[in-house]
Image (tube, rainbow, N blue to C red; front, side, top):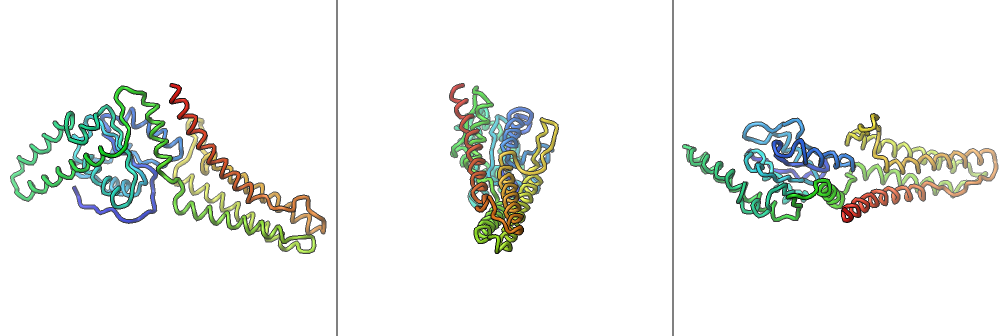
Length: 329
């Protein structure tokens, strides 16, 4: 395996990296899992372009692994046949140890104990790998390959000892729902850049509320400041949604249209920002006319928080509905 030390960077570019054997699951289980992750707003890396070639994992995949918050490993019957997949697994386990990456193993028609001990369908694959070592004439190459196989075995054992999901003859749709729910609970969907947007917007909204409270017909300037801060907060919210849309490629392709920014439930914050701007403009117009405004209190901080809570509850409610349907089924 090419030496590659994971960096300590926490600026993730992907929410989920999916490691899988394309011949086994690309057009079935993995494609359905990828679609479900996208539907829930995860930016998932799945090697749909078949980047993996030859004996080594390509740099693009190594970077994708390192820059993902959580790795999902789909162990299938032929997973261990691939040297580059085993190298990929070693890299995933290194990122788990050094970067705190979450790892979720999926045992797809494979006994977890076979993965843990390299038995059953994995035994034949490792026999081929070890036969290749014996055919090597150069002593250094032979030792290097022995170490490589040792790393593979260790990574498989570590991964199989993690809490995961086992599918033998069960319902794939139910399993995918559980996997997505695991990902939701394991991954904080807001990255550092998104937190900057959120905190900046909230601070401007609080200042806007303070200006609104200090304003009066005799002091319309405070109302003007409050209105400008409300507009700035709204623009920050819009820019955040555009950022998310571009970064995570959000779209409603099944409905034949494309959504420019964010996700449906995240537009609640945008609604709150629009409401604040309307209230601030009304208040400013009344004050410059030397009249008392019917809307004295700035509404955005409360509306904004209600929108955030609603978004969270909506996501949680959808998750609860899925769990209930699963138990009923």
